[in-house]
Length: 102
Image (cartoon, rainbow, N blue to C red; front, side, top):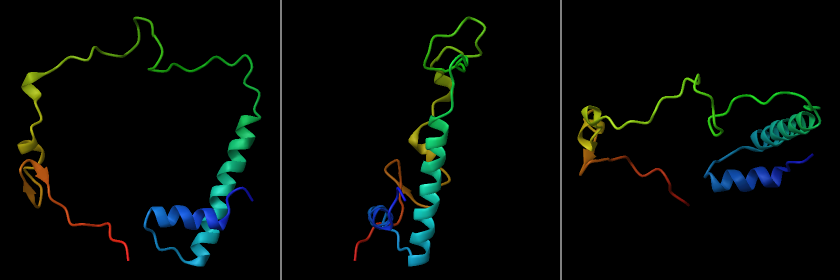
């Protein structure tokens, strides 16, 4: 097993999650299965397979990408963003505190 239950407990603690022993066991198994599948994918021979188009690489002129143009008529101010918020103040969303450590 590549992912141990101890590792799952560590990550759950970092994420402030309370998991039961069966949940920890199931998560360790599921995460391990994902890593096994990733190993299988790494073994696939992709020699001669053309890469797919990526936005990080240069494209030809027929690409459907558009120029990034500023649109002053569509400014999204903090007042607009928080207009429907249950509680807002000084241009920010106000939310209850959710991170508490015992």
